[in-house]
Length: 490
Image (cartoon, rainbow, N blue to C red; front, side):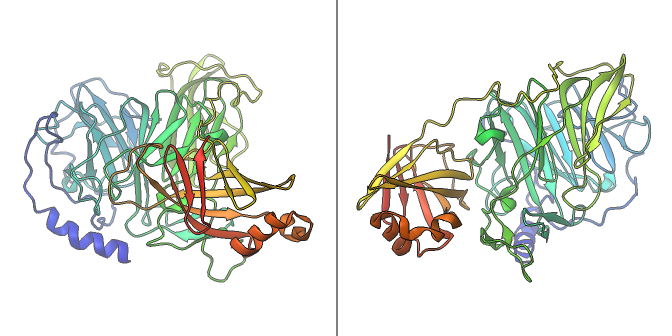
């Protein structure tokens, strides 16, 4: 309630600002709009659609896969052609209309993506524009350039440069209602929703997300599978569930966003302690990891899609463009289903054909491991962290003394920021919410360990399974504020 009320109060005034045009060199064209305010109650009304001129370009009868040229939500289908957007009712075949766009956007749209009640469009410079009420009647649609801190009031943001694929995702209380953590507990979606643009880089192993409530930078990341080393060919996200595929047809899905990750401690409570069966459960950490999906028994391309189908975080459908016995169409399945089924469409295949052997080839094209290793000492104990990656939530922390070693886990979650942060690790200190996990087996046998190791666990970590400590990292140092431990790059 607090997050929504705060946003509503500030945004109401902001929407009264006049819209002005601007060149790409000076920033996005200035548009007001209601994105971030309370949503209208969705309805089946098409009021205003008939006022839009009929499309005079050749368009498909139906849209089957969400992408950045063709996309859909529960209510509408949208296509992009030569800088202009066309719309029709998703449940009907044909009937395309030409959308009315702000003058500074008409003819300049380079990509679109819709999820839930918002549609995002990009211009030639990569600036993000949001159309609100995308589940409602066309007469309610309006645009804003606003994006970023504070409270969706920022001066705008762009998709990360050199992004191979990007997609818009909205997890909302109105459509999704709840999401499920790794303890099996359902949590209500915040009233202000969780909205991200997810972007895949050219190498395929870095996924950056930008949020309209976060700073206008490109610093927040979600790791790909295999500790951020999996190289994806394509990315699609809906309702905070991301779907990736590699050149060999290996596919993974993951439920993840800023709130789910553990970063939003202002509005939510999190815990690494087991929350199963708790009367008032906190959000279980770590966040859900990637889940490998079964291989498709047929020819496929890298044109993939995910969309929501109902309430709850399992209500998702996966689709992959392909061919079966000479027929073109798409393979599809529910998120948790074991088998894929083929739906013929007769449309030409637009994606790049992928190799698709039956065996798992996920690790055949992994990116190199992170080059950031840190080591140091605390008294008589030597500490080492290897292959630290800002997007990877769990990293081994090794302690050694007297010929013995302890294998602990360092959990790190990107902190909540309101000022820009450089991507990755640089000389600019980057602050994480850190937690050190001690295996229960170590605690059970602590008396058998070297006195220095034993003392560190008992005195510094209080013999606890989980100990919170802020962690600050640069490209040369790693500091554990509450432990008095500083490591240097090796």
